[in-house]
Figure 1 (cartoon, helix red, strand yellow):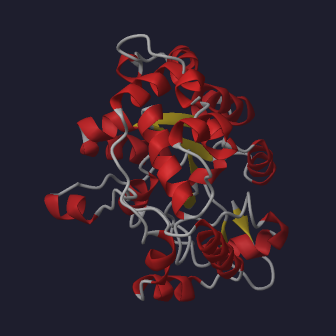
Figure 2: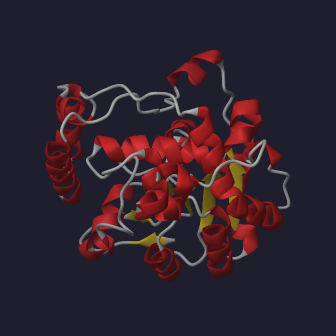
Length: 296
């Protein structure tokens, strides 16, 4: 889709990778970086959730110069679980292809919990946040939200890619994504594979209040498209100081993992029916104590 205004020339996205968070989207960005025309200077624009009020010209500025014939797209995993975002994208990009990347839900939720802790957006332990934190809970409703995306864009335009397949065969996974959006495949040589960031969080924030303030400051810079400043502060270690200077995260306790798998079981079974795939590896090996009782 071509668009412009205020002197902008470029194309609106042909595809959007919508997440949910912590499902290998940074790795996917690395794969597609030279195969598609992605936003200039940043992985996630957050236009359709945080900055929609900025208007389409603000968004188009990220794709200025995307006129070389490559498919245009963006990768913003926060979009997956937001109905308002679905509606906005459907109105703006009705023919857009939608990439959903789905990961075993307990691993994804624990990774999401750790990420939210770094920016001061958690208050309790993992079990409590799975039940009470809107971001974690909604992003874990795979079948519910995938079905809603398909209803708006059509089943053939919305494809779910499982991180199990990425772990089993990265080359085949990358090839399948490239085929879906119509770009040339990328050979994942050892050099390319080493350069693709897996982006797992190891340490949390030292101070929740300061982390929230730092997040607000960074989002303000994003609203101004000041990505060079954001990157410079990153290289200087400022974001690491505010977000990742606390304690190292422990491995998830096995009993709590089993309880959380039991908690997610209905959604996993619904997803099995929706995509026609056996997800036994995501289910609990035995019936565990309910998550609410464990957290209590």
